[in-house]
Image (tube, rainbow, N blue to C red; front, side, top):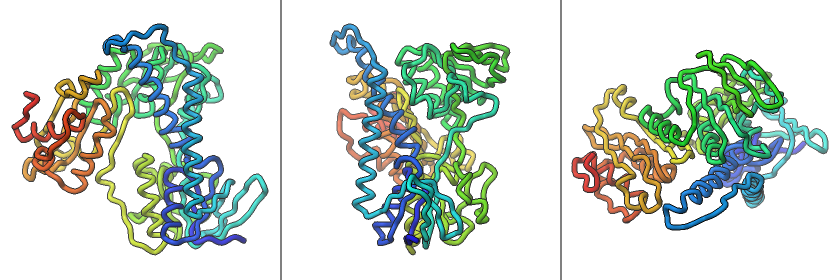
Length: 462
């Protein structure tokens, strides 16, 4: 029987990072993955969708080329080539992870893992069954899309985020159930490709986890592009499944006919079938594994991270949890601070937030001031033709410390890093505002928002 000091089950952004970190700390490590390294993020999530969004962004710019003094004729998107490029990017990154594992002397084993005991992992692979004895185990089995029984997922027209990435051509019409991050990103992709997109959201706003101001601003932008929204509305059922698509019935009585339907209402932890329940590992009501601040489960020597524990289901959180688990599994002391986790939506324009909203800060008893800057006043944004949106800082009035930010606009997902750093280390609006930022840059928007909060903004009257 093979032995290892640490065995990691699952090779996604939490698992492979945990494996590498444990190896860096001197442990012998085995990483078990039943499919491909990179997990959902690399193979069926973050990277494929961002690659498609990059393609449609190029298409959008070309369609506006006349605004920049460039004449382009006969623009024809090639969806098959976009999908090929997506696979090429994914394959390159996947190979990069395999090389990193090899460089750090992490043994990779392909197969389905089952915990026979807290220390024994059985792996069923192409070459049969083998067992590995581990001193410590880190569970990183990820999540899968929620598939409500209301819909027949065996029908070709009914898709999750997994299947939509395998389409051979863009549908003429697409009904998206749920308007969270995943749904909105696909709405932007297919809207740019000429698909008639309709979104149904049961909550009182799109992007339910974002501020109402950001959500309403984004909805107005997509409204102008022809995306149809049904807010505070439910799909009650499917009246008809046909070779041409589906006919969905809403609780308003309205019917929507669409060639394809994407069900995007969240993800659930992938924790069944691994033997966890037989070991007495404490589980939550959603099938998530319960862990403490050190990522320890209720069973000594077993840790869990990423989507398997529920919580914030983001790749960068899984990676951070993987590092914490690996450090604790190898005898170090490590905990994770969840108070500063950037949230990013790669729509057009992008959305990013971190820390507290004004409403949340006020519910915590803090008196706040707001610093705001519109991208319409940004020289860099105007030169790029991307002047929609704004950057907003939430600041503690008593201490001047930056509590959070909400950004909608060009490269918001990059700009949020400066604010995350400020929130993490307790920087003030004064410190940001008096730090010279290069001109012209989009990063100036953060400085300008900080100056706006101080009542000394130069480039805006807000």
